[in-house]
Image (cartoon, rainbow, N blue to C red; front, side, top):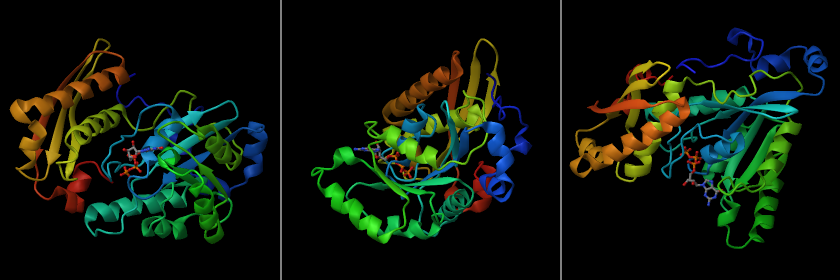
Length: 328
Ligand SMILES: Nc1nc2c(ncn2[C@@H]2O[C@H](COP(=O)(O)OP(=O)(O)OP(=O)(O)O)[C@@H](O)[C@H]2O)c(=O)[nH]1
């Protein structure tokens, strides 16, 4: 598969893929009769930073596409992952953490992405952490679609010391907020994920599949490669490196035999460079090796990966610079 070779929905050109909102406005009876009981729709996974949205999306889709890290705010892009089962197709929209504390351009953009995602999906899964309900969780509630389409996923139940706490926790939330269903899960341990998928499936509209069964994401491969590299960076030096770091793929040449990829890591300050490099370049070497191995698995061929570091002061707070670097 070549970079950019992302399959369009089965039998349709990309421009024919209507949004959930458009489909709800239109005549749904013809779609339903065509698909004979098959369900297909958009699902947004939302929640405040670090509650486990990416882990949950990856566990549900069954493949590692969006990045996961211990650090908050590591998923900045809206990511589509598609899961196709015998009777349903779930098109997942993974959104970044909803931010209210900071006013920077980055956070305004992230909030915009969340708001857009929620307005245009069939089902919203609001992820919270078992036993915790913060102001950040409550702030998302007014944005949830009214009616039967909001599901509360209470994640990290494995980390709960007293399982009985769960009953009073869920009871309290359900008495105050209008969720249509509540499913306790552990994204990390794969607990109750089938149950959650069942609740989502029941709320998807009837309609034919929009993507080929083996489609994993509609993001080009080079975007996924950049995410894989960014994941390695956050995993290895995330505790020391502030958030202002992104990865831009500058060169991508692919043949049947292999690929040459050049990636640039953009950091905000000169002082971030030695953090990334590590002693004698050891960090960067490990980051690049692990990313190369992941990209090779993704492309199923050998990859030559070069990684550069560039300093670009204050990029994370300038909308123009963000656009230049590929953030919409
Ligand atoms: N114990 C436990 N930890 C989990 C579970 N799900 C996720 N985590 C951990 O929680 C941390 C955050 O997970 P992410 O999936 O990156 O969270 P996120 O909500 O996507 O975070 P942002 O990208 O910052 O919005 C990681 O260290 C995960 O391993 C779970 O079910 N149980």
